[in-house]
Length: 347
Image (cartoon, rainbow, N blue to C red; front, side, top):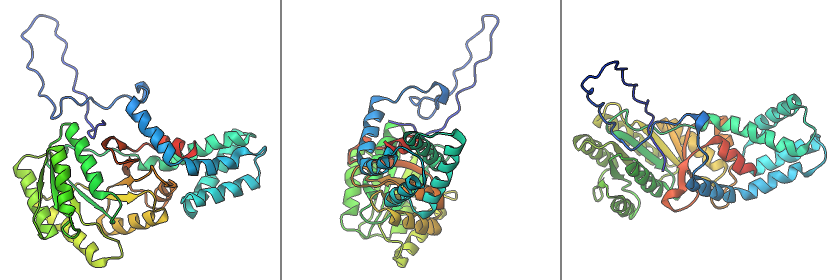
């Protein structure tokens, strides 16, 4: 389990020099069992659950890792090494721009460190990749608005509704009350699929059989505010960015949500399939142009995913990655760490 909330620790109580009546207790935070964000300097080692999840991530990216690792088996650092590395990065869906950036950064780091060992260059590449991915590392903050309205989009088959179900469970486990909006009225059984997740997580869902997606969204946001919910998650229909009429429908949903709550939607998330390579980058660009994305959920990194597309996203459209998924289980959705991902990719 992980925290979605950034909270400052409560102020220290005033020093009392003489016995006095106890000061009234500070009001409890909305989610009292959540600890404040830990000091990075005093961070504990990864809990077993996180380590298990990292092992799955490494396993999913092992094909790419093995391909890149072969580049560093030589005895010298020369142009041949950089050419082989360029080919390996391009094959990993890193893209031309991100590959060139990583090669330039790696040459600089090799020169500065004066290393002559090809094996050491791999570690320098991991550092360069982690630095490139660092701007994508950001926490999803819940609690600044009530309800926090999160609109979720994605193409068919990316795992959008399943990711919403997992996100609902994590939010509920963190103490937040969640309301789901079944605004995917295009796909057969989408409403039923979301209802199953609602039952599993014991949360309410707003839906209309054959209803207008924007109207469902409006009703859900209004109901969330009236019922005092912490989060409203809006599931929208899967669509390709080339389906212009459906992209216009998404824009309409966003406008209507704003009518229901002036500051909403507070988050607009896109779910992308980690197996789709450069197509995922094209999706990010198209949906970002249409909706102004605030974050990404990257799924299916446990299979044949090459992983390099995150570097391409960081280089060309750095939308934060809130979560990445490595399987079907609830615990297989975790927060994104640039350093962990770079190490997993290059292990």
